[in-house]
Image 1 (cartoon, one colour):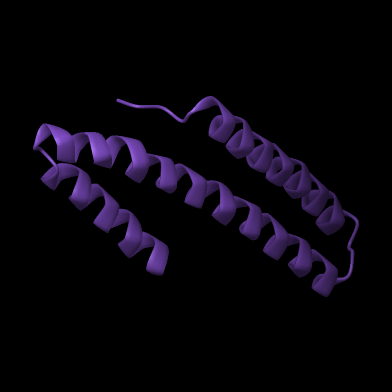
Image 2 (cartoon, helix red, strand yellow; image 1 turned 135 degrees about the horizontal axis):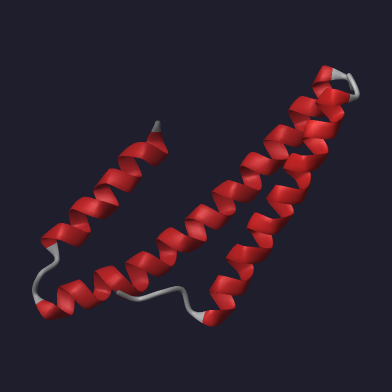
Length: 91
């Protein structure tokens, strides 16, 4: 199993921590009965951060885990994993 390289791990963690902070802010906005459109815009912002973090994780998976599986000659399982991710991502 290959984990994220250090630089990418740091980027993913920063994105996720930012999303967490924004999510906490959204909760406060809802609790404070803030304007719906402002809340929605913040939700979209968090979704964009999560999408960016997910793409970085998928990128690293393909560049390391899938690549390694091809070299070792057992790529079918990794291809299926990536196809499942693409299927979920497309929905």
